Image (cartoon, rainbow, N blue to C red):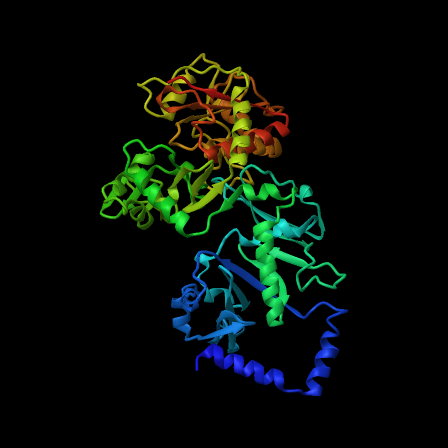
Length: 581
């Protein structure tokens, strides 16, 4: 007799027993289903697609290494006739982690033991598999790399009330790594969270459930809250058939309901689930890495390295079988080792390799722990009319509508007339330092501030921040960068925004800027009344091209749009100037 049949016989035997005390207790606890909502229990729900809904398919979704280490129980079962897999167990701990600290502080020996427990119930529903996880350990029992990362948000934007959003977490898709979390306990309209549609990934939504077909809302007059991210935290029925009804309804909402118009923008940039599509994209990226002149590929500083990058005197690139030290970091230096690998192994080589920044040219004094080399590259690959973006080692999908609107905004920014005209970047000027020095020659009206740092109370890590590379004749803050399609400019645009913020709101930043300028050019007219009025992004594109939305990385487009919007909100003009090459 298999496990499913045995469970069914136990359920039937239990169902045939008539215990008045049990029945009366259930009626007192839950009341009549006609007048009250069914019994529910809050759980964290994950969804898995592209899985064969059989016993083997369900087992393939488990975190087998974790389960094997802890000897957790696995039982094949069913829920109202649907195939299911039950996993549960506990991990005993002889002593809590804080016990030694208390003993050290007080001298009293303290030993407190405890156990963590959890459970995961995987259920096959049509062509999908849902995992219900419970306890502190439940989510570790399944392989979340195979879960649909868009599931929770996809349901929420179709099933919650836009005017009653309690919590929003969003991440800027750029090199800053900024994550914003906003909480309004009573809830408010999504518009009041001031989410910028360009380049912000909404990773979590908490709000009031509007769907009345689910067990938790049926017959209830009180608002029901859910939390959505890659998973869905929601109360589902504790009745077997009721649970299947809830899961079918959740599937229906995701498949057939349209997103709320106020929440539709959230779908325009979504992380892609690890699976067949990302595997195909990895294969295409592997091919692009092997090209002599790869298009749609660039360098971006990882989030954890941004604050250290201005102080790097050398870069140590370690890719399997190679160890190279470079004074400057570009795409070629990162890919050099990977290109020596056979097709199909290049991206893997970058994942196993590292890039580290050093404070000295010899590569002895590291500024921060090295980061996997593949996280230093960005890529854009067309997928139909949309676009896949590779950022920090993960794939994101940007919708066609979002991409077109963003490009239109960037075209308008780049089309603005400019008042600053900078000399050509000739072959004799090897790097940005040489170019900036040539512009700021005596009598030019420009002041060289490249590598001159402002250290303030807020910006007190390392030497500080750069106000600009060049201060113009009219005290324009000019930020200079050489790069084209293969060199994202996100850091440049972000640098202009950070500098203006410091000069507007930190008096000590203005004091030090004025002192710095007077040391460089005593006759230059600037004093403590200075307020930034214009920021100039001066860019020398590769191959003599003019900068356009077509040859500007999507990530850089996002950061440029956000920087321009915020600077203009402070009544500061922004110009993007193309340096002839």
